[in-house]
Image (cartoon, rainbow, N blue to C red; front, side, top):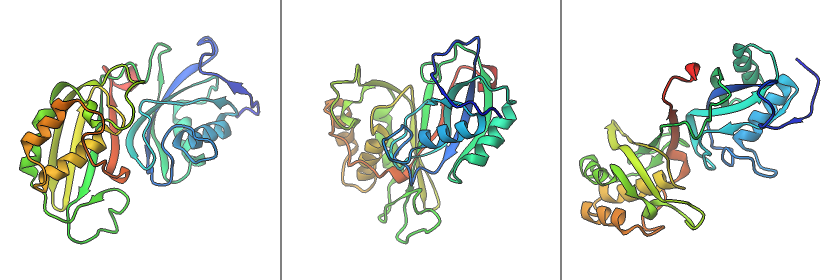
Length: 268
């Protein structure tokens, strides 16, 4: 382990550094999202601190998806450059030694210098967990949104069909869209499954707008409770009016499952 401690940017020559890709899992409950926030705990901040302790280098880490405050991840993809000669397994064990208990590195790989963790992704996948029960579940507290009234999963999935394919999803984003080049996204899968008292909404798309999944879930819950018809849901998709869908479901139920790439990360 080197004692050198200086700032090293991500644009440093590939002749002196290599790229390391991490697959990370975390409980986002106590963090203000992935991205650095001044004087607030974030996943990026904790990862960079752990990396500095392990290698002695100040490195900027880049995530495939910038999860919001309170959102969890099972398969977040993170990349950084390093001049360290530590073997890949040491990055897993060493970072897990320094990271808080609610953040973990599950796997690590060396990547080619041309690999871009965001641009090279083919799709992103999220799950949203709903506790559909009249009684609370202490075990699922913080990881699922409680909805006491019974949900009609079949009718929710009928509404989901309106999401499949390429559409302008402006109605499902939160905030001003002026800074977004396009609100058109391609959705490959959108469906809800019920397993006991747990309903899981799964959505796969080429990319997502801000709060798109949580706003989609909020609208689908209204459909499942009979407070919105399938035709009304379709009209929201067609309206292309920012902020029309919702209400925004709480962050606690959302989990980034994975980003999908053309080849396994160990071969990139």
